[in-house]
Image (cartoon, rainbow, N blue to C red; front, side):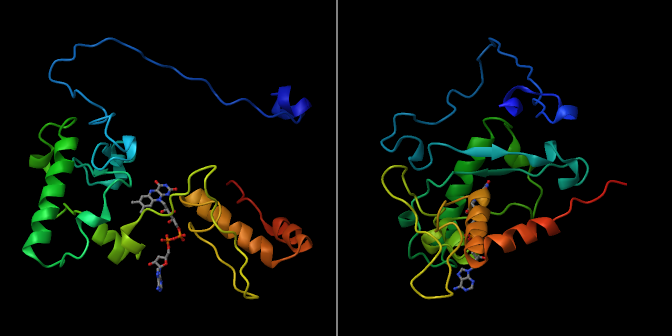
Length: 213
Ligand SMILES: Cc1cc2nc3c(=O)[nH]c(=O)nc-3n(C[C@H](O)[C@H](O)[C@H](O)COP(=O)(O)OP(=O)(O)OC[C@H]3O[C@@H](n4cnc5c(N)ncnc54)[C@H](O)[C@@H]3O)c2cc1C
């Protein structure tokens, strides 16, 4: 119980993390975006195709990600693009190129709600458009999928042991599912299934934090 209330690290407690500063303000809305999500009432809600675009400019946080005076940016729809819209297209066809341009135009228009002339600022040769076919080809994800859409309470992903002795499964199609932390956890579970508890302890004893200079 002590560890729940003792925040003094020097006596074995767990220090509390720091607090926050916030600003909540009323501002003039003229010329600003009218929607965070393009349509909250779309039939599939937040999963409706092209109703939500995530934009980020990581070089604002880490300038080493872009040459001086430049930024890198990324905008995407978060696992809402239907594969069917692209299925069967020849990647070298005019039809596909046109559809990619249309997708680019859609994403640029979302970015331009925040950086109005973003398209004109693009550094020639740096613009790359990904599609479900890109995901399928380069990430080898079946039908370009983000991964298994297991709904809490409705379905559970398979575990890591199989009927075949010595064959173990891991990755985001096994429990606990999508995302790097979950995938790492699935790898850890599979690894733990391979060795004994004593061996786990032995491994933990080998882990050392790097010494500070
Ligand atoms: C666009 C996108 C954004 C994401 N963003 C985040 C994020 O912000 N944070 C986060 O935590 N997670 C994110 N994820 C999820 C995360 O990337 C995945 O859950 C995770 O990478 C799954 O790891 P995995 O090892 O199971 O599969 P994968 O990373 O898909 O690795 C499987 C590997 O197997 C290879 N492969 C497939 N078939 C074969 C074959 N027949 N022969 C040989 N090799 C093959 C593939 O090429 C691939 O390298 C994102 C995923 C996507 C697609």
